[in-house]
Structure formats: C-alpha cells, structure tokens
Image: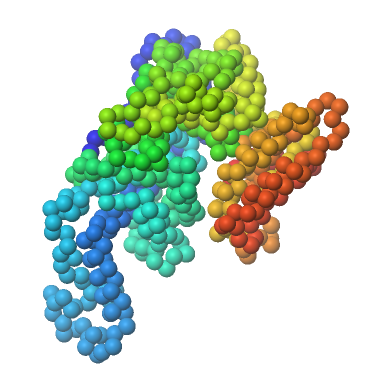
Length: 591
C-alpha cells in the first residue's frame, strides 16, 4: 500500500518564499483575525476526528473480512449455534459446571458457544490471499487539505478489496453502522478508549445512505462528527495488503493550525487503480485524486491554507457556500485559490487573498478555470469516460462557471451553478475586492485588522431585499428529518432556477444557509425539527404583480411525490416582506 505524507509545516516562518517585514505583519494580522473568527479546530476536536477515523477504518476492515466466502459460512454457523443455545431444551444443555473448558460443547461468557474450525472453507490459496487485503480509508476535501473548521464534515473514501461490492456497502455495512445507533439493542457495549478525549461508547446517528446519487454516498455522524463516505473497490487488491495497516492508529493527524506541526499518511490513488472500475466508481475516486493533485502542485501549502480558510469563511458568511444549492462548494473554492497560488508562488497570504478577489472580480465567465491541461486520454487499461469539452459536447457549453478538475477524467466541478447563484457570487466578490484593495493601501496593524474584520462582517442580505420566499422544511419526528431535509435540499435548485425568468420581470437571490427554527414546548415529545431557507426577490421596475404559483406548485408536487415521504414530513413556501422576517434570521444558526 502506497502512502503519502502530508506535511503541515511548523510555524508561519517556515514559508519558503522571501517575505518582507510588511508582508509578514499582514500575514500575522490575517491569521489573528481568522483565529478570532473561530475557523481553526481545537486540539480536542482534532483528537476526536483522529479517533473517529480510526474507529471507522477498523469497522470497515472487520466488515470486509466478514464478507469473504469462507467467513460468511463461518458466521452463519456461529449464528445458528447461538440461536440453538438461546433456547435450551434439555438439562444437559444448561449445565456447564462439569464441562471441560476445552470442550467444543462448553459455554463462554454471554452464553455463546465457541465456533470451531471457522476457517475450514478458507483453505484455498486465493481466499487466504484475500484475507490479507484490508479496506483503506482515504480522506479528501477540507480534511485532507488541512483547512477544516470545527463544525466541518469529513469526506472519505472506503477503498475496498475485490470481494466487496457497492451493494454490500449500502446494505450490510449500513446495518453495521445502525448497530451502533444509541437506540439499537445491538450496540456494542465495549468501551473504546478515546485518545485525549476520555472513554465513551462510539455512537452512530443520522445515518442516510444515498445509493442512487450521481456519486453514491453514505452520510452519518460518528460521535457527533459528520462523515460523507464514498465507496470504490479495486480490481486488484494487492496494494491493500494487511501489512500496510499495522501502524494505522498512528497515521491520522492533519495539519490544522500553521503553528502546529502534524502529519497524516494517506493512501495514494494511482492511475492504474482505475482499471476495471465502472463510471460510478471512477467518480467516487475523483475527489481523492483532485485533492492529491492540489497538494502536489501548490507551491506553498502554508500560504494556500491560510488563503483558502479566509475565502471559505467569507463565502459561508455571505451565503455563497454550497454545491448542492447551486453555489460553489469546498472543491470549487479550493481549485480557484490553487490557481492564484500556483500563478503567484512567491506571494504571501495577504497578497494572495487580494489577488484572488482582484482576479475573479473581473473573470470573464464562462471562460473555464484550469489548473492543468485538459485530461482527456485515459491511462492504460482504464475505460474511456466522459470529459468536459464544450467543443465536443454542446451541453458543456451551457455551463456558466466551469471550474475544471485537474485529474482524469477532467470534469466541471461547478456544473450546478445557476444564473441566480452566479449573480450573487459575482456581486459579493466585487464588494470583497473593494474591501481588500483598501487593505493593500493601509498602514499599521490596527487598520489592517479593521479591513480584515470588514471582510468577515456579518452579511447584510436581509436588508438588501424587500421581498422573500421563505421555504420551511420540517418533520414531526426527529428520526425522519435527516432524510426529508436531504431530499428537499437536493431539489431546491429546481425552484431557484424556475424563479429566474427574464420575461417574468423577476430575479431570484438565494442565500446559501439554513436557519434552524427554535423548538417549541410542543416539540419536546416528538423531537420536531424545522429548518428555513430564504430567497430574495427583485422585480422589474413598474412590475406590480407576478404570479409565482406555477413555479411553487410544480416544486411542491416534486417533493411531495417522493416515495420515502412519511406522515409529518412537510415543506411550505410563503411570500413574506422584510418586516415579516422571523427573528431567528438575526443570528445565523446553520442546520
């Protein structure tokens, strides 16, 4: 198994390019502001993530082993024997004090008899070889890049040996996770030692498998940490040999603060790993490949991480963050910042941040953003996959803000972006450029701090519009909310796009943030949950009345016809004025 060491660097002074005194001062000031904004995780938070990944990989390896043909048979025998001893029919079967402890008929603690000869069908050479292939848990996205926030999820890939299938992943592994739900009677009662976090039982909640997604994903929380887990299997498990897992509990640490030196060793995806994979599996690997390449081509990771943190924090504050909602997600912002870092290898973070907003405030979309040449040709032995190319694929030419991934197959990572979302992104980037341009002319730490604080000021979205659509997603029972919310969120882009009609004299301004509604006394019995989303509306001059009923009714029909909908799942759409906005939008309470 090939691993890559991702070095987080020592302190700020470890940046390799020459820095002037003013540049160092600007960098320190920017870092101080970011730290005050709370974008860095604590050591306790890092330890919890470390533990969560260790536990998850251990569960994946145990689950993978259980799916080997011989192991399945052994487990089936074990289950039959356990059931047989659960309802003893003779006095002999319940009398254990005179049994030889070495006898196959003796009981062990908990009343479960030992299973003899469990490997009797694992004797052939090929199956024994497969037993040495273990699942590799590979992180990517913000966690792998070392720019995650305290409340960020972890994106990870379960890279599995050939004997495990995607169907297994979304069936038996999901059941394995459900056995660790607090409400499950099958929850493992063995305490697990948390490094630096105390001792407690590992719990899995909010389990949401989405096997039919464009890139199938399993969402859940492990000890309160949100994880999005993808799946792919290698056609050749040689690189997943067990020997490479012997030190896995020492592998999980990621650079977070520039002043903390930590490393994480990661499995490296190679071109040859794509051999034998279908299109869905290749898409699942793409996130890891993109992250790997970003880490390889960025000249100064220290500077890059500071700037990417600043940009992502700014985007969240101003309601611009979220690929599902048609805005830019983590990988999109990461590629944009990488372009600026790559083209300005000597620039310190404060200058890179200014260059970022200067560049994209005037970018001529749909001119694509490329970090490398278009990767159109598949590696040897890899199937030919669709590649973004507007000259060959007319549909690609309709994309508004193409941000192209640097690995094969080159794809537009921002195909979700719509007209409404692009307009908001462009407006906010232009405003941010005005703010950071002032920073380049400032003198003195106090003024620099003021400028950076201005960049991260709370949004003024709700004072910019007189009319809004208020979309409320709710479920009477907490157990239903997660799936219902996820389904509705994934389809909100349809409503936003439907509202954007020039002939109607209407422009939509969505705000990419959900607000958790405060619970009411009546909600305590059922655990009712509700989350709100807002779209600002602007009408053409002279427009007195617009009928939105067709747009809203069609959207309601789509979500209400979802086959997984249960009683108590609801979505409402209301037109409200600024003066009627609920009080909870005054404080951003993200779901």
